Length: 247
Image (cartoon, rainbow, N blue to C red):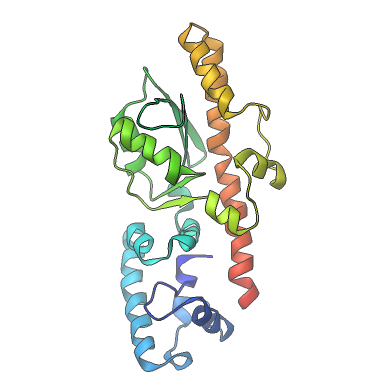
């Protein structure tokens, strides 16, 4: 599923109308002809296609993030696979007002970087990573990771964002990240570690245990890098559910 397969951003086009377009062979912007819908709606669709094509040529995903319903932001992924930034943080607790970020990992283009509090975790480095990306991908990031980064580092996290927790729920996966990974066969090096262990490991590092920091970093990197295969699976399954089933 790519942006060019989509028509729901157009005023007056809901999921039912989009399915009708697909069923009539209009599965891509290039295939659109106005006969399937009325003249007024056809004009709106043609206008959206023209404007959308311009924004795609510029790599402007913010236009589509604003145009698409939140529940359909996963459709942006296939257009920006190489520019997607997968992100996960570890903290000393659950409150962005009273707790600290300990490590932040970002994964993009097959490379994972980890920044550590008190070392190289700075607002400038985080902002640079975010500004280099076209799409942010997290798990529960809208409620957790992003508020922490905005509160603790005053960074601008306004780029288009796919929080995988919600499309996973749409597919029937209601557990946490590690439970969903197990259900889908996504492996990690240290499957027995949890968020509580991440807090413990940080405090052990503060008491001088360098090995604890290395373990924490490995755990954070697994959380982050595993978002990529999860995004691939989610995107593929939603494509099958939403698009292929109606063509």
